[in-house]
Amino acid sequence: MINFAIDLATLTYHAIAGTKTERLDDIVARETPVTSIIPAYNEGVSLIDAVHSQLNQTNIPRRIIIADDHSSDDTMRIGQELASRYPNVTYERNEQNLGKAATINRILRAYDASLTDRILITDGDTQLEPQTVEALASRFTDDAVAAVTANGILKPSGTGLSRLIHQGKAASFNVFAFRKRAQSLRNAVSVVNGSCTMYTADSLRQHPFPERTKTEDTDHTWMLLEAGNKVLYEPRAVNFSTDIEGVRDHYKQTHRWFSGSWQSLYTHGRDLGKAPSLAYTTVHPSFAEGGVYSLLYLVGLPALGAAHLIAPDSVPATWFLAGLAADAAYTALPILAVDPKSIRHLPGIYAYKTIAAAGFLDSGVRTSAQAALGQRERWSNRWTRERKGEV
Image (cartoon, rainbow, N blue to C red):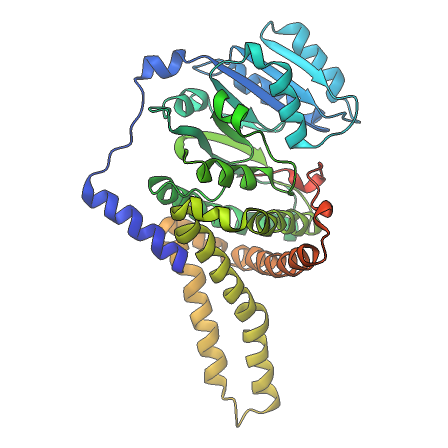
């Protein structure tokens, strides 16, 4: 709630101040040369739609580079077919699996001389609305802007409990999109949309994607902000990714996201102070609130209920009921403020936040232990199934 209050105050202040979003003229944005890089690992099923969505843009990328990270499915066949069919599509394949960050960096080095000033990076299962590239390009209004990130929307998949978790995740991400608007206004975006973001070529030359954490998007976002750049959010630039299936994979994905965030916190350390707005209005409040709330929700509230059952005279039921009511308010108020219709997915919201709270605490303990024991080499950036659905 502290983070939500900070973001709500940010949006309120800028609304009162009459802050206007700066954008390039539509014609300029539509004609801005863009190079697109699609790192892909076992994305044969979705790669055709991903490429076609880029070919259907109001600003069609001058070159679309499919960067196959040594896939074991039919990604190679499909990538080669797309490259032979469309003159602006190029297919590249790694001789061995390198990981997403290393794959992007390899393509950037190989094509450095022919890169345009704007580089779009999307995932192999990402589909773009027709105006997405143009909308992203429109926000590069001054030299300080290093990246502009899109509004990622998850498409449902799975059934039963997995679908329920998806509904809760989608509602939570609606709140996160609201928060990104505020973070963008104070230049404190916590993480770009890993499935669709546009960069300047110079920013990627100066700051290649780091390969030292599980979430290169978080790590790289902080690097750019610490270097004095602007990282913006463009809600009109919409992309879609299909959510993962299976309760176990939902947990693994969430655990990986939080692991990468904890790893970035340890890796950046005092360097975060170079981006004070990011450090003190986004990152530190988020970790503090996330830790306290996760403990209260997963440990404190059940302990209060158990204490009542064991000693009802000492711990009255009203204490436990008050705790439940407080948690319900904490959970529901941001949802009601941002997207009231999503409140119908409250069971899914509770299912997802239970997964998120457990993942946050477990990843924090594991990452802290690895940092203390000098085991940072375990912070791999290799592809896994649960990478899909990044927003």
